[in-house]
Image 1 (cartoon, rainbow, N blue to C red):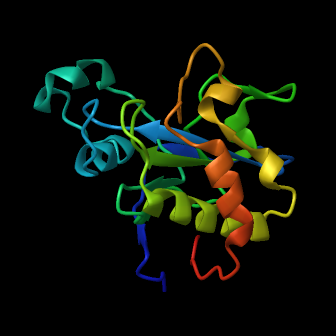
Image 2 (tube, rainbow, N blue to C red):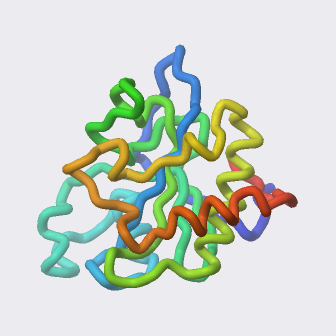
Length: 185
C-alpha cells in the first residue's frame, strides 16, 4: 500500500519503454497553470487528460495535448506520482542527452510547480532531493551527474526548471538525504 506522502494518480499519457532501455537519467521540469499560478488542480487535470481548455484563456493551446510526468512536487513539497517508473511518461518531447535521442525512453520526469519569476520552496528542494535519492537507489546508473533540466535535454526549445532552480543548492542537498522512506511504484 502506498505511503501517504506520495499521492498516486493514473495518467493515460504513457507507454512501454523500449525493451532495451535502461533508466539512467532524471529530468527536472517546472510547470504552472495558468502561468504564475501554483495550485495543483490544473496541472493534475492536464496530466490526467481532463483539462478543460475553456476553463482559462491560456489553456486554448493545450487542447488535446497528451503529456505527463512520473512525478509532480507541489509548492508544499507533496509528491504526486502520475506514471509508474517502469513505464515511459511523456515529459521530455523532442530531446537528446549525451548523444542519445528520445529521452523519454531512458529517463524519469519530475515536474516542480513553479516558474521563472518565483523562487522554488525549501520543501521542494528537500522533497526533490529525497525523491531523487529514492530513484537513484532503485536505478544505480543514475548519479548526481545524471540529473538534468528540461532545458539541458531540449536546449532552445525548453527553459525549465529555469533560472529560479538553484542547482548548487539542490546538489548540496542531495547527498545529505540519508533516510529514504518513499514508496514509489
